[in-house]
Every structure is written in structure tokens, then in C-alpha cells.
Length: 110
Image (cartoon, rainbow, N blue to C red; front, side, top):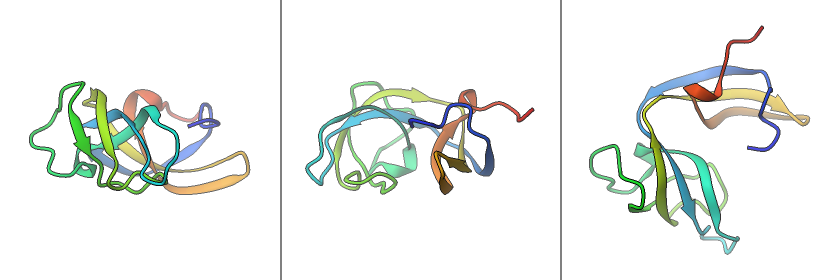
């Protein structure tokens, strides 16, 4: 998400699951979103076993972005890292339980 790089955050939850980068067209009529990072396996309707292969068509059961819930999506890639929710303030906006950040995207505060 724009503005997150270098922002200080507090981890509010950690999960052992598969995270996916996806492309989808929002159900609210917005333009197609490509390479959206991240949705987790549990946010897919009837996904079967993880991890899903790139190119797999899925239906989203997630609501952390407008127009996401019920949207048809394509898996772009999968990540088998620990997945985090974080609390942070960026560009003057406070976010609580922001979904999702994967382990390779974070580093300890200095």
C-alpha cells in the first residue's frame, strides 16, 4: 500500500497461513486491481487445500478493500510466510488491524 514503506508499525496479530497476491475486478464497479497483496487462504470461498497455483480462479470472501467481497479473482502468486496484521499511522491516518503484511516485508524497529 502506498505510504507504508518505512512506516513504524506494531504487530497486532500473527497467522500461519498462505497469503496470495491476486488480480480482481471490484464488485462496486471499480477498475481491475492487479497484483494486490495480500489476501489469505481463509478469505477465499471454498478454496480447497493450500497453496493454490498461480492462475487459479477464486471468489473472494474478504472485505478489507472496497468491492472485494464476492469478487472473482485470479491467483498471481502464493507466499508461505507468517502473515501479520499491524497497527500503524501513515500520512496522518491511523490504521488498526491492517490486513496483511508478510514476514519478508517487515524488519525490527531501530
